[in-house]
Image (cartoon, rainbow, N blue to C red):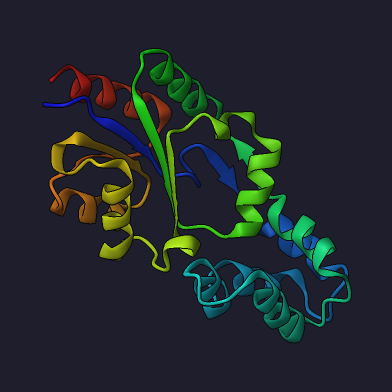
Length: 201
């Protein structure tokens, strides 16, 4: 087998996040409480359309502004909305070790350009990957097949040449159906152990 690529999900694997932080900050400039704002920015049709590439950042901001009465600028909103991430250091360290061993790595994420702009600026590890697949650029979110095809096309790899780490079972299942080797991320320790076993095969 050719050398595999290691594919990392981003949120809850390399960085943790909490939309509650953003909701509190946005609520301070809005007509709604943070409890009502949190679902709008975490799981509403607004965020799904934004992370699927069907809304631009300006359109997403406009929808949230209309729904909440947010009184700030788009620049202020971007700061509030995107500054919700903390590093998962054991996984960042694991990635650095894989790079030192000469393995190729990719990021494969359902995300948006506000978030990526913030992470790129604030998390130095983020630049050390060989490729990036983002849902908002592809126009599809995991577990839709289109985004998996995009990863295969970008990397030039398929099947067992791809070793994929994600915290969501439905995303992992779609990768496994394409014969990718998969790890359901539950903890850094478990992921490290399973990864080493798969790399030794």
